[in-house]
Structures are given as structure tokens and as C-alpha cells.
Length: 142
Figure 1 (cartoon, rainbow, N blue to C red):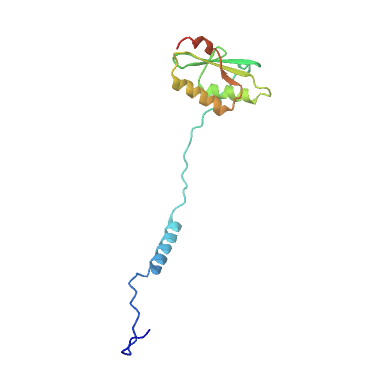
Figure 2 (figure 1 turned 90 degrees about the horizontal axis):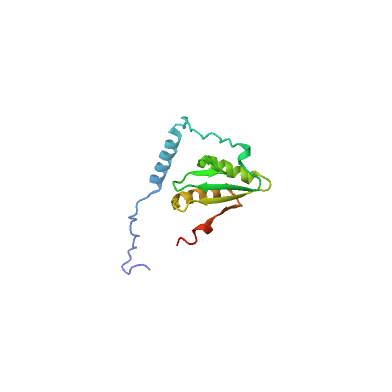
């Protein structure tokens, strides 16, 4: 609607900044930066653990005993082992066609954190016949 005095009212000037040139310059700079980055050519050496060799007579076909002392040391069928050997033994148990049972007997004085570490190793190995044995001797302790 035109004013009554005959003058045409002009539109108000735009006060927003035009960001299109700014975005264009930023995209050009980004592309130049990406092009000028040198490719990563250095290598990092990683010391991988050696595979643990397990004697074939350590795994019994029906049942294997895994004991834990009060200090947290492990023994497999009366052979002292470490965590890496336990992983290898459990992997060998899982790989057999009919996996034997693994009876876990932690000492009553063993720290729960250590027992939990062994249970995590057993869980990661996928051993389906892994269980606690000999807990009936602790039922009167509490």
C-alpha cells in the first residue's frame, strides 16, 4: 500500500552479513590443507606375543582340574601355568570335538579380583564346560 503523499517507500537495507564468500574461502583453504598434508609413511613396530606351546598330554579327555592358590597362582592338572598358558589350554579344550569339563577350584583365601580375571579368560575363550567344583567345603564357612 502506497503512502498518501505519493512517495514510494523503499525496502529497509539488509543488515545481515553475506557469508557465501566466507564459506567459499574456507572450503578452498580446507582443500588446500588436505592436499598439502604429507602421507603417513612411518611404521611402528609391535612386539606380538609368541604362541604358547602346550604339551599334548596336559589336556585330559574327560575332565581337567584348574586350581588357584591363595596367592593367585594357577595350576592345570597339577602343572603350574600362567595366564597365557591358560588361554592356550582353554583354546585347545574348545577346539576338541567333544570338549572335556574344566573344574575350577579357587582357594577360599584367593582374592576375588584374581578369580574374576580367570573367569574373564574362560569367558573369552568360549569354554562351555567350565565350572566351579569343590565349593561344598566352603558352605559352613559363613
